[in-house]
Length: 157
Image (tube, rainbow, N blue to C red; front, side, top):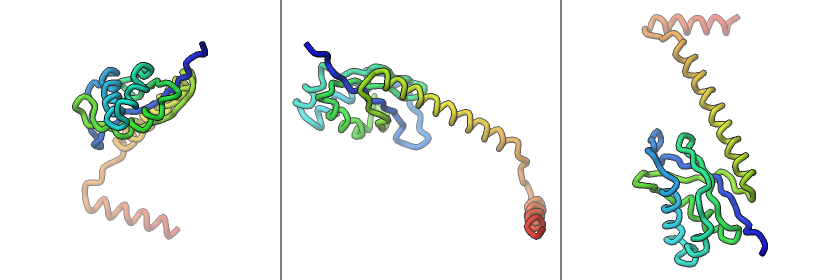
């Protein structure tokens, strides 16, 4: 019997409102919500096609990223349902698809690269916050006028 071919979907859970925070969302909540959405969108045929082969391989609470697995024949039902999810466990969220791969190794490699980018962005934002905190604050109109005159003098030269 030939091996079962699968597709791996790398996804990210984001709060629907900007600046919103997400409390603990479990893998089980994500799988349950995706199955309900597939059934609502594609009916019993869609649910039956992914029911036995669909599961969550990994989900990281800190980065809110994870990997979903489905058979190659039924992954399209999954891809069409993910962007339509607006609530998981009573929390308003949106799911975005980051990458679709054919191997687990490729999906985990992409997930690792995505985590590396997130760490790099976080370090950069910390550095910018530190530089912003070290800047002297302008508290009076006199300081603003002096800064304006300094800029004007540098432009004249």
